Image 1 (cartoon, rainbow, N blue to C red):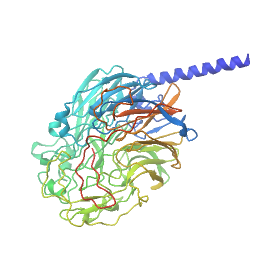
Image 2: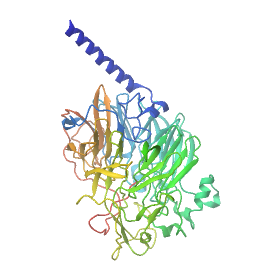
Image 3: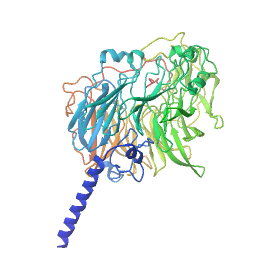
Image 4: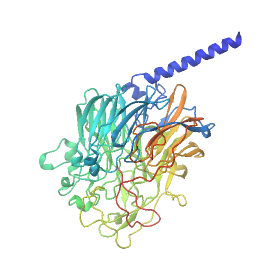
Length: 621
């Protein structure tokens, strides 16, 4: 009797657990649900409901079924061929209602059973690929989706934002941000902020005036638009913030668009009702082509902006790189934390942008609290905490004389997501140690890869001394655990880099990392020990997530540039080189694909004579 009672009780408890997990998965996603993500009151801790999992973009999961004791037993559970390809995979999937949602090349959206990989629906926006491809900067990529009120919000690379029914894939509404004829494209993941969905535009290496839009979730009507750079003064200014920004530009700046694209970093604080936005480089890169510009800061390029979600008005800004001359934009991931700094808990915003400094700001006021190099830098000797300005070396303002600077124009940290673990206190940054040789051209040449104003390197470049952490011997790409409270590297290991892949960290004392060469691995979060590593035989890797369905924890990510495949959307690992979604579990035994053939095309400028040992790296947005 006792054994029977125990068995019945155990089955009842398991049934209750499954019922609770099922209810958690199917719960409606709304502003309150998204706000609770990452808190002790999180009703859907097994799901992944926004690009950074939480609205503070921490990419931390409380799941701990997979931990340091069993991570070595990971294996593939199933795979799904997402399509024929066309560019790198960069999208972060979402998980809700036992369904995994993803976006792949040419903005194709799919929904799968998160347990088996069975396709539930698929939606193709039918982009005019031949006409759009020559106007894209930089690459045929999409970084993710948003979900709320029963809808999936999908960015379409040709300038649209589309709302789809989460259960069926039916189009509910569509908004037009801009047109590729004007060099505008859309590659970033939208974010939900209250009753609005917010998104920005790419294309900032071309004559584009950057902006960010907010749309009403229910109707798709545009609520507001904030331009990140001012327009033609003769036509008036949208508001006082644009009027003030115009004072920091010179000459006929608006004729080159201005730049300031918004293609990646964004975070939302529902208590302050502020949306934080990172902005891109000034356009053209080379300062002398932006008008009579010497000594002008060019607001609001290379900046972090805090906007009121209700009105779209600017509350504060911090310019990471004034008078940008190096494509050191500040579009990279923004992360919101409550952090103890010098014995005081502060509500902070953190960023590890391309310029190589790790920034911590008070997110209510914009006050700069810390700025320390997390890789080698040579363009500036530090950042003045009183003024907030970098101490730029005079030689960095190149014109005729080439100069080799650290970090590379591709960035010390680009779009590859970092993650934060509250147990260790570390931020896990995919970082690049490298340099780029800058020299101004004689004119701005319009190329598909950008209207940068750069020229050919001739002669011997100036090579100033570097400052900050020395690289690991012979390593360009690393994963480093950064301690933001103490501004130090806790540990670092080879593998990774600022472009491609990324990290997620969990309560199981783990960091899951995907590396652009196709590797997936699990590491201990406290020490950086590699517990599991496998080659997926794909490249162009997207960030990982972790989720739980029916009491089982999984890890998922996409990878592969691909080439035209005989079957689009088939769950067949044998399709020739096609991009795939990989899902791993403890004890998984599914087959991985064979190595993919070389990609048929890529993106970026032709190789230049960059000095050794670090080769030049293409910019990305």
